[in-house]
Every structure is written in C-alpha cells, then in structure tokens.
Image (tube, rainbow, N blue to C red; front, side, top):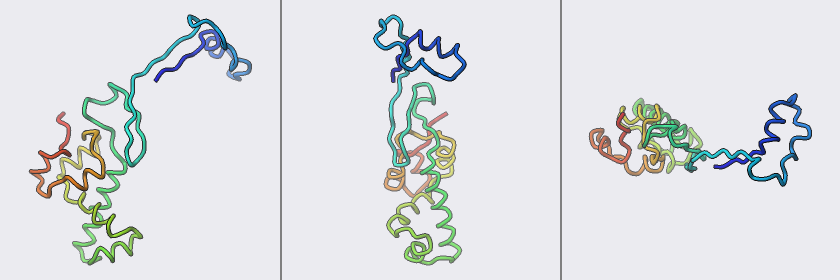
Amino acid sequence: MQITLNRQALIHELLSDGSGQGSRCRGAGTPAQDNVELTCPMRVHRTAGGTRVIVPGQTRRGESQPSISIIKAIARARHWSEKFASGEVETLRALASQTGMTQRYISRILKCAVLAPTIVEAIVNGHHRTAITLDRLTKDVPLAWSAQLHSPVEPVKK
C-alpha cells in the first residue's frame, strides 16, 4: 500500500488548530519533490470470517492471528458434543431444532469437537498456520490426536 502526502499540506495540518479548514485542497498540482510517500508492504487474506491485512513482520512466519470464527466453531462443537454425551439431545434433528441451525452445518461443525488440545490451544493463541480455515478443519482432520499433529492443521512450531 502506498500513501502520498503533500509535504506543505502535512506541515500546515500538523501546525494548525486541528480544524482542517483550507488544507484539503493544498498541494494539487505541486511538484513531486514536495510529496512524501509512505509505503507499507502487505497482503490481503480473505477468509469466511472477513478480510485481514497481513503486514510482514507483524507475526512470525507461518503464524496467524486468532480466528474468531474457528474459535466459535470449536466452542459450539464442544458444547453440542456435551449435549449428546449427557443425553440432553439424542439426534442431529433435535439439536438443529433447538439451535435453529441446519443438520448439515451441525454435523460439519461437530468435527471440531475432536481436535487435539494442542491444536485448539494453537488456534486460540494464534499459533496456527494462516492457511487454516473452518472448511479445511472440518474436512481434513483425522480423528486420532497423534495423526492430527502430522496433518495440515498442526500448530506452528515456536
């Protein structure tokens, strides 16, 4: 991303009373040497939960920020799993009726209930690979915790 500021307009704005009157149009048609350019290398990462701007050096290589949508899915999956274990609900249809969500969505999210504790901790702390998405978590994760540690969802080594 690149931002170009007119040096004189910037100085005027910084030294003014903050009202900003008259400084917006200054600098139009001024020579390039009167401009200050600020450049920040970045990339945009789109996920189902939104769009993130990733700035190099912001996180360690291969790490991401905690994903609220994935954390929410894990919490729901564990809660729903407990409901099944306690006998509070007996079928996906009953849980879907109770939650107002589709059976397909619930069965997909329930796969997050078997994630290894180290993977859940890594996701909550943002120490997971940036490529991890909810879609990938609910498709590619083996049931055995030992196998999960060697799968595409393994935590980033610190």
